[in-house]
Image (tube, rainbow, N blue to C red):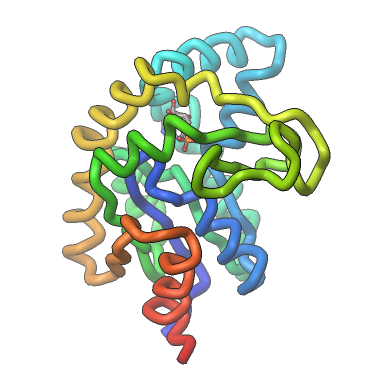
Length: 214
Ligand code: AMP
C-alpha cells in the first residue's frame, strides 16, 4: 500500500506536531503544519494577519474560505512527494472539500489521548518560534533551561497554550474534529495509536503499525 499522503489527527496536546516531525525527518515526508503556517500569517502586519491572530488567540477555527483553497493548492504543488498533514483538515467541511477535489489520504494516524493527559502536557509546553521545536517542562526539558536545543532561541509559551484557550480548543476539537474519525473510518484508512504513553513509545508504535518496522 502506498503511504504517500498521511494525515495525523488528535486533540491539541496529543503529540501530533512532535510525531509528525519524526515522520518527516526519518521517513522523508514534507511536514505541513496548518498551525505553524497560520501562526506565521498571524504574525504579519496585514489585515488578514490581524484577523487570523485574533481567531487563534481565542482558540477558534479560521474560516474555511480563508484556508481551503490555500491548502489544496499546496497539496497539489507537492503531488508525487510524500506529505504528512498536521492540523488540516480538522473539520468535516474541510475533509469534504478535499474529497470533492479528489484529494485522498492513504492513511490517517489517530493519536488517542485523554483530556487529563492533554491538560498536563499543554500546561508545561514550551515552543521555539523559529525552529518549530516543542519542549515540556517535565517530560521533554531542553538541555539549557528556557533555550531551544536546535536554534538557541528563547522558548515561549504559545499564546493559545494558556489555560483559558486550551479548554476552548479542546471543546472545538470534540465538536469539529472528532467527526473526522467517522468520515475517514468509513473509508477504512484510520490507524489508531495510543498516545497516552511517552513520546518514544508512541513513536515506536507509529513505526510498527504504520511503517511496519519490525
Ligand atoms: P495547532 O497548532 O494545530 O493547534 O493550530 C493552532 C490554531 O490555528 C488553531 O487553534 C486554529 O485557530 C488555527 N488552525 C489550524 N489549523 C486549522 C484548520 N485546519 N482550520 C481552521 N483553523 C485552523
